[in-house]
Image 1 (spheres, rainbow, N blue to C red):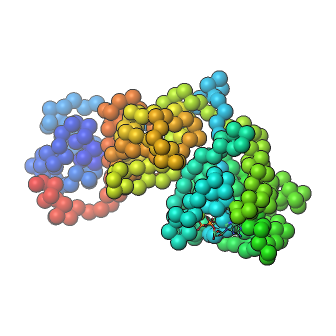
Image 2: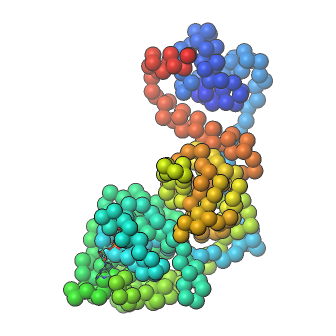
Image 3: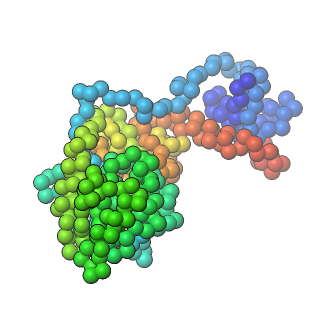
Length: 370
Ligand code: GTP
Ligand code: MG
C-alpha cells in the first residue's frame, strides 16, 4: 500500500504537522512529522480532521515539462553554449578573457577558477556565443561534469608546453559521455617550449583525431597571451554551431538550468541560470528543484540589471526562497500557489527519501509534540 509522510499529509490537508502527530499519539502511534504512515492510518486521520478523501495523481502536484517538445514553427535560432574545459592552469580563463577583452584571471583567488562562470560574447560579425568557464582543478570534477551537460560544444584547452594531463583526459571522457562535439584549442603556442604537434599525436591515444591529423575534430593553435588564433577559434565555433542548427522557442514560459547557486550575504539566495527555452522575465513566478520564488531582479554577466533573458542567455536570478542545486531545472509557473504546492511536494519527497529509514529519536518526538 502507498505510504505518505505525516508532514506531506498535513500539507495536503492544510493542517499543522504537529497536530497530526498529536492525533496519532492519541491513537497510540509514536511518529514524527517526517515519518511515513500507511494508507489506512492516513485515511483515518483525514476523516478524524473532518476532511474528505481525494486521491491525486503525481502530475497534479508536480511538474515536469522538460520532456514536452515545442512545435517546429515556434523554434528560432539561439546562440551556442560553449564550455571551456581542460587541465588546471592550461589557460581556460585566460582564453576566455582574451575572447571577451576582460581580465577575470587577475581577480581569482590564487588564479584558480572555483566555480562555473557563464559569459556572453559578441563576435566581430555580430554573432552571439555563451561561454562557460569551468574549473580545471581535480576537486571540481563534479562541477565539470555538470558543465558538459548544458553544453552544445566543448573547447578542450591543452597547453602546448604541458601536453595531455589527467584533467585533459577527464574532460575528454566527459565530453564523449555527453556526446558533445569538441574543438581542440592548443594554447600557449607563444612559448618557446611549445610543442603543438606532440599534443595532436598524444590525442590519438584517446581516439581524438584532429583535422591536422586528417581527422574530423577541429583544432587550432592559439595563444591567450598574444591573441594568436583567436579569430580562427571563433570561426570554428560558429561553423560547428551553424552545422548543429541550434534552435529553441523563445515565446513561452521559461525553462532554465541552474549552473551554480549560493547564499550571498547581501543578496540572499542567488542562482546563475542558463535559459533553455522561453524568456525569463522579471516578476515571473517559478519552481526550481525543491525551492520556489519570484524573479526580483536579474543581472547579466557584466552585473547589469536586465528585464528579461531569452534562450542560451546566462543570468543571475534574485528572489529565490532558498538555494537550489546546480543542475536543477527552473520552471516558470502560473501562480504563487502552484509554485508553493510543487516545491513543498518536492521537499516532502526529498525529506521522505532521507528519513525513510531513520528511526525516531525521543528528542525529535518531543520537539514535534511541543
Ligand atoms: P584553472 O582555472 O585553475 O583550471 O586555470 P586556467 O586553465 O583557467 O588557467 P589560467 O587562465 O588561470 O592561466 C594559468 C596561467 O597560464 C596564468 O599564469 C596565465 O597567465 C598563463 N597563460 C594562459 N594562457 C597563456 C598563453 O597563451 N601563453 C602564455 N605564455 N601564458 C599563458
Ligand atoms: Mg580558470
